Length: 371
Image 1 (cartoon, helix red, strand yellow):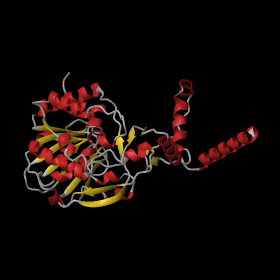
Image 2 (spheres, rainbow, N blue to C red):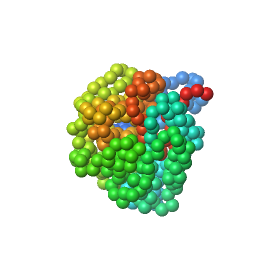
Image 3 (cartoon, rainbow, N blue to C red):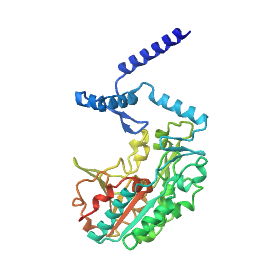
Image 4 (cartoon, helix red, strand yellow):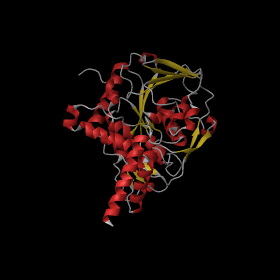
C-alpha cells in the first residue's frame, strides 16, 4: 500500500511538473491585478546568497498550474475550521474587509512634514481628508475579536498635528452616520460612489463650495459584476459581486494624463473598457498615474490641486461643477518634483488619502523641503 501511495504521489508530481513546463507563462494575473514573477537570471553570487532559489520559489508559486483553484481550496478549508483572516483580509459578515496593521510612525511623521512643508512653501488654502477603512466604519461586519486599531483616534491625532496648517474634513463622521448603507464595496477596499458622496458633502464646507443634492449628479449603475482587491487577496470565493455606480460624465471637456512618455488627452474621465476586465474600479479615471488634469468648462474661475491615492478617483466626479480645472497628483508615482504641476496656478489644495496609505506609505514626504 505504501509503495502504491508513493507511486501515485510520484505520478502526480511528474504530471504537474510536465504541465507547468508545457503551459506558457503569463506576465499578468488579472484575478490578482498584479504582474507575476519572472524566471530569475542565474549567477553564482545569487545562488550562494540564497537569492536565486528564493526568486525561483516565487516564480514557481506564481506560475503553478491551477494556482487560483489551489489558493481558493486552501482558503475554503481554513474557513471551514474557523479561520476568518487570510492575506490581510477579514472574512466577515457578508463582506470582505481590510485588516490593517498598526500605523508606521516614521511614515506618518514624514507625511505630516510633507504637508507642513507644502503649505509653508506655497501658502495655498489647504484641506486634508483621511478616509477610514470599512473594517473601522462597519465593525459589525468584522469577525469576532478582529484586531482593528483605533482609526478615529489616529485621524484625530493627525488633524491635531496639522491644526492651523490644513483644514480637517470629517469623512469619518460622514461615513459613520451611514455605516449601515452600501458605502464600501464588499469585495474591494475602496468606498462606493455613495460613500464618496457622503465624504463630498462633508468636504464642501472646507472647500467653500455648495453641497449639491445626490439626485443632481445623475448617478447610474455601470456594472453588477465587480470583484475587487479583497476578493483577489483573500482567496475567498463564496461572496456575491459588487455593483458599481457612477456620476454622469457630462461636465468633462478634456482629461489629460501626463507621463514620462508624454501626455495623452481623453474626452471623458471614465474608461468603459475596464468594465470588461477584472480591474473594474479603474473605470474611474483609469489606472493610477503620476499626474492628471481635468478641464470642465464649469465657468467658476476656480482650480483645485489634489494630492491623492485611488480613493479620489470616485470622489472627484462630484466636484466637476465647481472647478474649471482639477489636477490630481499621486506622489507614489511623481518623482520629478512639483515644477511640472505649476502649483501657483491653483486656488486650493486638498490632500485626500485613505488611512491605510497615509499610515503605511511615506510618499507625501517627497514634498518636504529644507533639512
